[in-house]
Image (cartoon, rainbow, N blue to C red; front, side, top):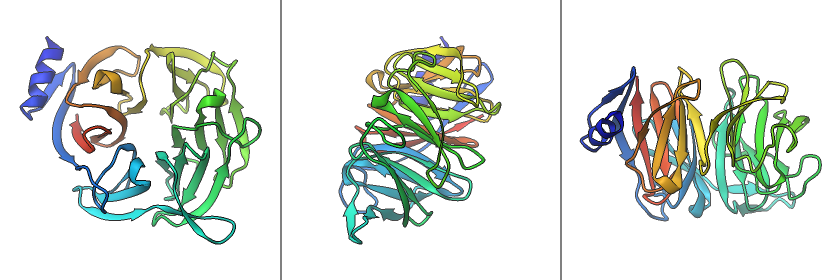
Length: 286
């Protein structure tokens, strides 16, 4: 019954309360196009202060909007060692630290670019490989409150933790918790590292030691958490976002998408990208 109420409530644009969790649709933004302000297969999303950063992957750029979804600016080029500016290849995921440093994953090039808040490139980490600070189709990324960067090195079946200058701190390897194809990562309030891989959502200590499988699930592309540590798992093939409490117990789901791919939370709002609808959806969470 809770699931049915939520579906009808969201379709009608009204808030629905499920077990002390209220989800209210607030707005949606985006339409297909190539010009500034339009979206083409949006994937990653992050919020910094009052700005929303959307990885506009097929337009090979990051598009920045204010919190009312008004377009502000793009950034789409990197400065190579030869001094020339080249386009991004296939940007996918994004994370922004407290100091405003932006980390953008380019999965095709197996690199992570670091930008300032205006989109000026500062550093580039990685390149294709399996040793040291090399990647193979990286995807999810997060920055903790101390500025450390956590990267899902997906096809190498590992997690890398680095400093903002690119020094390697540690790795979580495949044999730790049977880590397979990690796609997203985030720290919780206890400083545990939560990793989404092909088997589900796993919990590691802050030093990278496996603790437990919190949620067993296949097909999730990303997750985020709200300020109560409720977990929002995006399931693109099922066209929904599934919601769990911090213990991993199922609560409800949001079902108005065609292909939800990534999400982020800035109190009290949940933002979800839909790569087929070329939209960003905004929900209020209470």
